[in-house]
Length: 190
Image 1 (cartoon, rainbow, N blue to C red):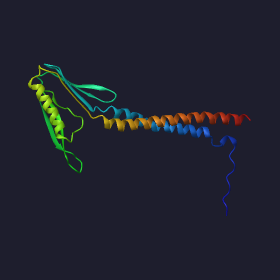
Image 2: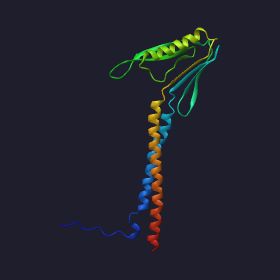
Image 3: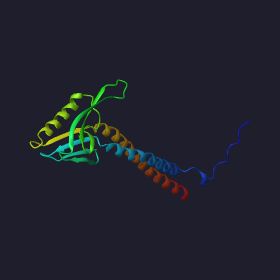
Image 4: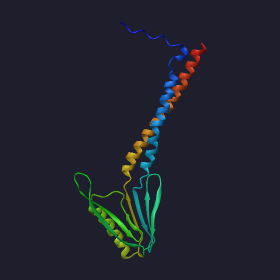
């Protein structure tokens, strides 16, 4: 037995291309939103750490991302208790030792690196610079900058780019929707 053929759809019930492209455009916008929210959030990871001390104080600790910066703390020389290198092991399978210098103050400890360093010399070099400044704070200013923003640029930039590409594709679909609507109106008028 053969299946009965479905009756032909009347002209008003035919699927419309304009409706399909409009739904596609809306779907692309909805898909782009999480990328456009997460992208800038990831780009703004405060991975650049700056410590600036004037001769005789005060010292300012600043953290910056690609989009904004914030002051993490301002310390007088009396509030700074010292600097030390924190040592631990990475959580990876290799379990290599990792290092991060921390400024010890009366307000707590403040890391001078956003990410842990695998080279001990890098962390101990920063520790030595801060100790030299604390030994004679009135002689010269101290300026330390450690920038770990490259990873956030790659990930946040990729998320933002995907979101923008989805928005561009959505715009193209909206242009196609208008063209389909015009064609449908001309077909109905004829």
